[in-house]
Image 1 (cartoon, helix red, strand yellow):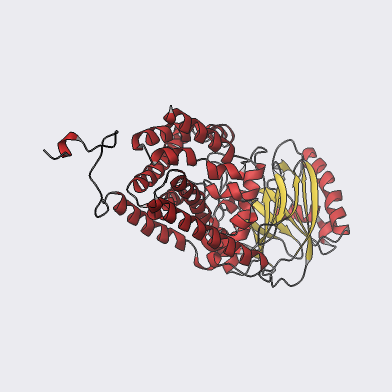
Image 2 (image 1 turned 180 degrees about the vertical axis):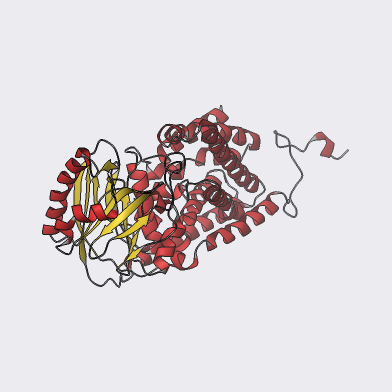
Length: 476
C-alpha cells in the first residue's frame, strides 16, 4: 500500500507541477512521497518511481506526439529515459539517507538529475527544453539563480529541497539526520535568498528608454503569400496596427514568425509607410531563393537586413527549410532570433557577449504551449541580463526585463502591446562563464556514488526487517 500511495501522490504532483502551465509549488513536492519511502524501503521506492514518472508525464507525452509530431518510439524512449533518471536519483538519495550520509544525499544527489537534463540538451534537437527550471519562471526570486548557474541551478534546488524535507520527515529522534538536514536546508535557503535579493535590488545601470510595439493577428495559416489576395488582406489588417503603435511612440514593432511568404524587398515596399517615419519593423516570413526556403526575420528600417532561423523544429521544419548559421545584431544592441532559437542558452549568451542587450523575437508556438514557451524566453533573458521582446502568432506576446519581470503580456489572436523598456542592463555571471555548474555537478555525483557504496566507519552490519541481526551474523 505504501508503494501505491507514494506512486500515486508523486504522479499526481508531477502532472500538476511539470507541464504546459504548471503550478510551481507542486514541482517541489512531487518527489517527496518517493523520497520518504526510499528512506525506509529501497526496492519499494524504486518500483513506485517506475510507476510515478511515466504516469506524471502523460500530458507532456501527448503534447510531444500530437502537437510536436515527435514519432511515438522517440516519445516512449524519452519517457523511459526520464523514468531511469528519476529512479536513479530517488534510489541514490534513499541509499545515502539509509547509510547516514544525510548531507551528501541533500547536496550531491540533485546533481545527478542536473547532469541528466544536460545530457538531454545535447542528445535531443530541442536545446534546454526539458529542464524543470521553467516551472518556476513566474517565481522571480527562484529564477534569479539562472543568472548565476543557468537553469541547472534551479533544477538542483528543486531536488535538494525535497530531499532535505524527506530527511527531516524520516529522522524521528535521530539527531544525526535532523541536524545536517536542517543545516543544509538553511544553507540552501540563505544562499538562494541572498542571491535573489542582490539580483533584484542591484542598480540596473540602464540608460535611455524606448517604446516597443508587438502585434499578432489571426490568420488562416502561416506564411501567406504577400502577392496573393490572402496575403494582401492580412497586410491590410497589420498596417493600421503598426501605424497606430508608431503614432503612440513605438520606435520598434515586432510581428510574429512566418506571417508572410515574401522577399525582403517586397516586405520593405509593403511597410514603407511606417519605416519612412523612422520606425523599425521586424517581420517573420518564409523566403524562397531559388530552390532554398528559409524561415527569416526581416528587419525593415533605414537598411533591410535578414536573419535566418538557426534551430528548426525537427520533423516540422527541417524537411523543407534550410537553417541559418549567422547571428544578427542591429544598431549594436538588438539581437534578432526566432522562436525555437531561444530554447538554446548558448545562442543568447553569444548575443550578450557581442553586445546585444535586447532580443527581438518573432515566434509562432502551438497555442497550448504559449505559457511554457514564452517563459523559456523569459528565463533566457534572466540568464544573460537581457530584455526580451517576443511576439508569437499562436501563443503569447511578452516583453520581459533582465530580472524576469513581465513588462507586458497578451494572448495572441487579435492582440497588440506597447511597452516602454530600458534596453541596457549589467551582464550576469552565467552569461560570462557558461556551464560551470555542470562541472561542479559531476564532482558531486562522483562523491555521492562513492559514499553510497561505502559503509560508514563503525556502522553495524545488516539487520533483518525486525531490526535483529540475521541468524548468520549472530554470535554462537
